[in-house]
Structure formats: C-alpha cells, structure tokens
Image (cartoon, rainbow, N blue to C red; front, side):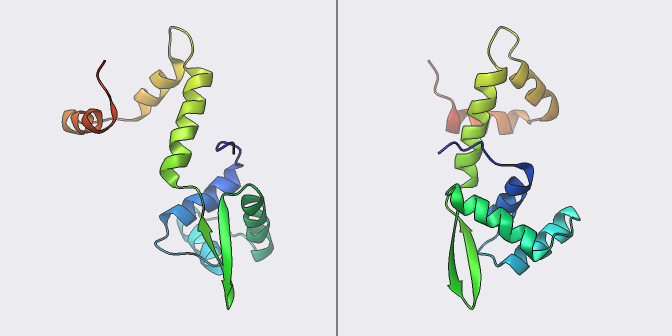
Length: 124
C-alpha cells in the first residue's frame, strides 16, 4: 500500500478519524469537519471519501444502526511513510531542501530535541 496516495479531502477525513477516540459515523465526521475546518460537506460527499478510503484499505467499517468507520492505518504509520517519501523526493542532493523547509516551520526547545533524539535517533 502506498501510504501517500490520499487526496487532501481524504486526508482531512483520516485526520478526523485519527483524532477520534472511537469509531465515527458519517454524521459525526460531518460535524467534526464543519466545526474544526469550517467545511460544510453533505452526507453523500463524505460517503464518497469513505468509499475511496475503504478501497485503499485506510478505513474499515461496521454497521450497528449506522455505519461506523475506523482507521486501518495509524496516524504515526502514515506520517512516517509520508516523511520518508518527501525526504526521498526533496531531500536528495546537498541542500536537503525538504528538511530545510521543514526546520524553518517547526521549532523545538532544547529539551524537546533531546527527548526526540533519545527516542528516535541511533548514534552511529
């Protein structure tokens, strides 16, 4: 599965599902998207996004009264693959353009950076 093949709107639905503590209904997704992103989607539109996400194996569903949707791919798994894809594409060459652009938009305290390094960076 290519974990970077989502449209912006599909990714928005995934973000709502990832942020949810439990499976969501279409009505719940519509409400969350409206409140969080001020986008007034109709039910048929959200169902279309969810069908595409199911076809790509990003979500699964079950029916208990209404259909409930839950992610099959974790947010961390998606972001890890996305970052690798971007770094492979943009990070090649001496400039490391992707990493440079990312670093300009994110700031870490020294304590946060040390904590990150301890958890994620293996010294060579």
